[in-house]
Amino acid sequence: MIDIASILAQRKILTLEVKKAAGGLPKSLWDTYSAFANSFGGTIILGIDEDKETNALIPCGIAHPQQLMTDFWNTINNPQKVSTNILLDNHVYPATHEGKTFLVIEVPRADRNNKPVYLGTDPFKGTFRRNHEGDYHCKREEVLAMMRDQAIESADNKVLENIELSDLNAESIQRYRNMFRNSKPSHVWTELSDAEFLIKIGAARKGSDRQIHPTLAGLVFFGDYITITNELPNYFLDYRERLSSDTRWSDRVTSGDGTWSGNIFDFYFKIIDRLTADVKKPFRLNEQLLRIDDTPVHAGLHEGLANALIHADFYGRCGIVIDKKFREITISNPGTFRISLDVAIAGGISDARNPRIFNMFSLINVGERAGSGLCDIFHTWAKNGYQTPVITESLDPDRVTFTLELVSGEDSKADDTDSFFNDKDSGGGSGDSHAGNRNSDAVRSDSSSEDGGFNGNNSRSGDSKCEFGGNNCNFGGNDSIFGGNACNSHSDFGGNLGGKSPDSGGKLASKEFLIYQKIAETPSLTASAIAEELSLGKRTVERMIKFLKDNGYIRREGSTHGKWVILK
Image (tube, rainbow, N blue to C red; front, side):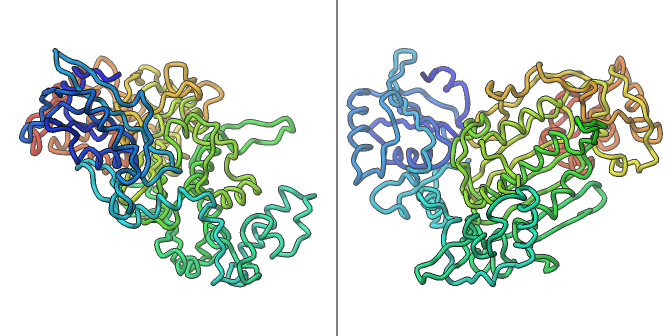
């Protein structure tokens, strides 16, 4: 049940809409119903007005709540007015506050099988979504994307009768077959012809002309860039690596550079070693006394990349982009989640947008078929003391962005959290490190988390099914993947993490001191500018600045054009 008092105490947010409803059900109510259902869900409250100048919420109440409820149910159940009713009885109810009555309508995020939820009889005219500016009419491409997700047959199973098997990249197919043969040497498919093999794995099917043609999955998995973009004009793959703030890109791989095929199979194996190259590998042996090269963190990065390729809407805009910075990896792909974010992170349920592509990857042991991939990533990051991964969904264009910070949060122990990457990329060169652990007094514990659930805002998960986060995360010790090396006194923060800050009573953690030092040098710097200079995530910098402010190191004078003042 909604607490009206708490609603009135806040400003309007993305998932809240209030309407005065003095003359009955407002027409705009249905725009908002469609928008919430097609976006991230939300709550509509009738009987509250909004001051247009201050945005303050003003409780007015409604005179006849039962009549409004009757009118609401009559309209929402009329298919000539609304395409589908996704509400249950408990989603609509009256609420009271200080003698006034309000009508609360809680709209869940619609299941993909019910999208688009639209008004009237034409989905291209009556479909709405929600952004920070309010409800908006969906573009044709947004409606088509929802319709593709609604279809029983997946888009990647489509037969492309205008393309021949000979148009696929023969070298990519051969590499895949070799990997399949190595992982399944006795499998009966290893003896099949290429055409028969491609049919078995879902990369080809017979068309209406009774000839064998690639499926959409086969095209993006084994095609060449030009052939792919003839079918999918928005298709693009981009890996960008920047490990130093003084260079634009340290390395870059794009699907259209003409030096390789440009398909997702070759892209995965072309960049996966780059993506994980700097992750520390502890010296561990298996039962056969052979060194274990991969860690759960390696596996998490493999899974994150595979997820983007498997769940991408290849008809969508902006392509698949992987950004690797010194301590942060961002993976983004076109499309939105087909299930709710909390369900996806909890694990156990898989609803791949491209099940044929999913199957082709899994046949060579890439990707988690049990639906626990995201759950495992969150668990691994928590177990190793890293900051919780952040998943963001955005609309127009539809995108999912997955941010993985490769550095511990404030709960890090004595391990060298800033030496997560190999020495060659630590900023000081391979000769600027020495073996030795940082003083544990230099590390602070802070269990604070960020606001927001999974309603379109940047979110953090604490789902108990995966045992994410909390104070039970085990970080450091002999099983830690971190090195233990610290930068020597030639670095900015030296052996004691910068020595003692004035009146600090000890030492700030490394990132906090670096940010403190930057602010002292240039008091007008913004959080974005600091993040850019130090190659840190903006949200990480904002957390560190908050710590410095809360603990009396700095304060802000002025607002937009203000400056920082050093207090100690």
